[in-house]
Amino acid sequence: MRALVVDDSRAMRRIVGRILTDAGFEVQEAGHGQEALDLLTEHDTPPDLACIDWNMPVMDGLEFVTEVRSRPEWRSITLMMVTTESEQSRIVRALAAGAHEYLIKPFTADALQEKLDLLGLVPLTAGDLA
Amino acid sequence: MSISRDAFNFVRELVHAESAIVLEPGKEYLVESRLLQLARQAGHDGVDGYVAHLSERRPSAGLRQVVEALTTNETSWFRDVDPFNTLKNTVFPALAANRTDRRLRVWAAACSSGQEPYSIAMTANDTPALAGWKVEILATDLSEEMLTKARAGEYSQLEVNRGMPASSLVRHFTRSGLNWRLNPAITQQVTFRQLNLVRPFPPMGRFDVVFLRNVLIYFDLPTKRDILRRVRQVMAPDGHLFLGAAEMTMGVDDAWERVPAGRSSVYRIREEQRACVPW
Ligand SMILES: C[S@@+](CC[C@H](N)C(=O)[O-])C[C@H]1O[C@@H](n2cnc3c(N)ncnc32)[C@H](O)[C@@H]1O
Image (cartoon, rainbow over all chains, first blue to last red; front, side):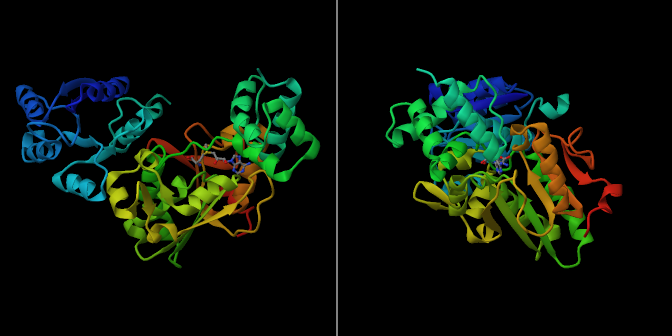
């Protein structure tokens, strides 16, 4: 499975990318929403997951989510906000715009993995091996 | 510095007698690291002196704290996801079709800090077949400290990050400073009570669903067998038991049968054994 990490902090992209790689994803990175849209346009097949920061230069995470949701060919992408924005109203706005999940920074690797479980994005689980 | 053999043996026997948890040799480091803070709070420099004091005086609060410090309270919301999908899509609808009094009773038998019983309450709320039903959840644990936290119904940002779907967070919680507080519609479905699984159960009626997850793993075989046998006695004949992902009844108490459900399994009392259970 493939994931796109959209965050203006390189350190953050590395952390999220590392956890996703360990979970079995192939990871691409973008530094803001516009760069992420460009990457999506270049590829024929969209990624399975995008992890998106809220506050970024050029195009923020909410605009990116809104843009992705308006394009039928990108409907299969699961969108998860990963941000320090923690007010209840923000979460409501992101979900209304079409985000599927919302993870608040700081978080542990377990927390990100549990979100993947919730979203059914588990490349291989213990259950499959049993 | 490391813990003396006498101190380790005392703690090991105490924990086994009080909670049935087995601390294998080799867990000295765990015992020492978990007890060091308690020892310092009680005015001792190290664990050995503190344990010597406990074994001479046997203060009940101190002994209880030692047992609680050595239990693992790790938990998360909707832990493993799948059991809660099974509860919503299979178990609750099946029970709803079998009951006329619009009432179900659930027991979360090692509830830690409350994430499990509250996840069950949210799941019941989201089950269309249970609209207008009364779902009572009894949540018990050995640890008073965990129960106090669970009753408060308030969780840190880091805690709600662990497995809580964003849609449930905004629907069932209210922001309270830096924390999140569960809404009364959820908390009022859950009653918390202290209960040691190793001791005879107090009178508590019958349950349609029992969650006994991620606790049997800490016990030896005779203890597991005894607990599973006694759980049968508080179970409705058509009740469902949920165990942790690494736990099973097979070879422990074969009066249970495993029913595959989603990626996980649930357990039911075998048909021929149900008659033995006075209803
Ligand atoms: C790892 S937690 C599991 C919590 C939850 N059931 C879950 O699956 O996430 C284990 C819990 O079992 C409790 N426990 C340990 N020994 C017990 C006993 N003898 N009786 C009742 N609870 C016990 C501990 O206090 C702890 O909260």
